[in-house]
Image 1: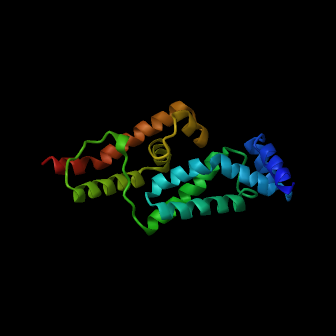
Image 2: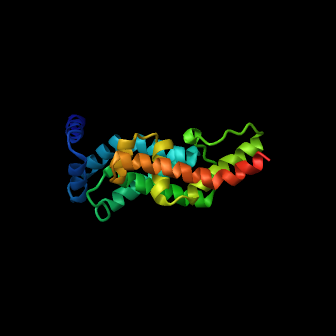
Image 3: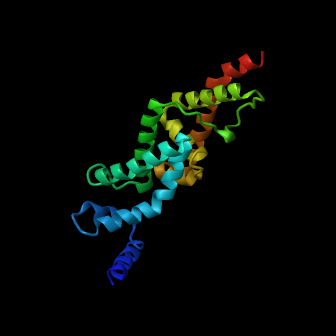
Length: 195
């Protein structure tokens, strides 16, 4: 019978909005755990996919994924400002990914970035991937974040806009401009290859 009551309570939480769930989590109510579980169910897969794409390493991604929700649980009462809940979670995940990246460099591949293709051996391919990661790191966060959300998390422009609090048109512009900046950063590399 306890399981039925628990199942009913969990099912009821699926009807709450994100804002209502956060409000419940901020209170000292016994329902806080159910609200947290519902948020985890709603956003866990997307956050996990984002982290795995950024890190490129399953074990690192699993650790960061767990840490993201631990930090979310700790920070939701003090740091969350009633904005986009997915944006808040991605910000936590992104910061943890950047910290992990500082500890260990991972190669990043942006298949759709439309940069010149190189048909070289694996050492040069690895070098190219590292250059892509470097060029992404050199972008201002204003451009880097939309590119990561577009190419790593495969979000639509309207979703990116919602997360970042901008219009879909602005998100499209930032992705396009960021790609142009990456091409400019990498152009000396391609000039060297083509010599």
